[in-house]
Image 1 (cartoon, rainbow, N blue to C red):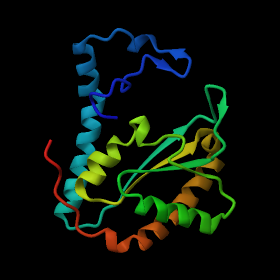
Image 2: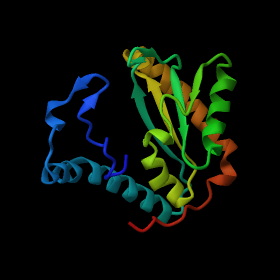
Image 3: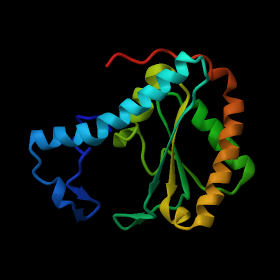
Length: 180
């Protein structure tokens, strides 16, 4: 999320109050941004800048997990794919996942989408540089065990490699970092 997003430091998660996030002063909010948000995005920028300077091809992939049920509504997809402004790489990833497992229930912009304000990393670091980019959301009951983690690691490694091949022409030299 963007640093100024109202829900960047939520006071409520689903129905659970987060006492440590309630009634933060501007100074406390700034300290949290300085401790976590800013270094995270600086680290991404540093890696992308180094890859660009070396002339390496770049695809931005961010991975998260989500709960199987949210506000009493089941989330049936074991994986969700979210795209930034350009859906091409995410679509190639979906095709690669379905080629391996045709009955896989893939959420498209589920359980989140740009409308939920969750695509800041894709937009800022991916779209802002003209990079192919995608966000992968795995339902967390799928990755509770070592076996589940290994299964998704293998599946995603193969699918990402296939999608990279499909998007090869789009993974050309990246643009410089956007002005901040």
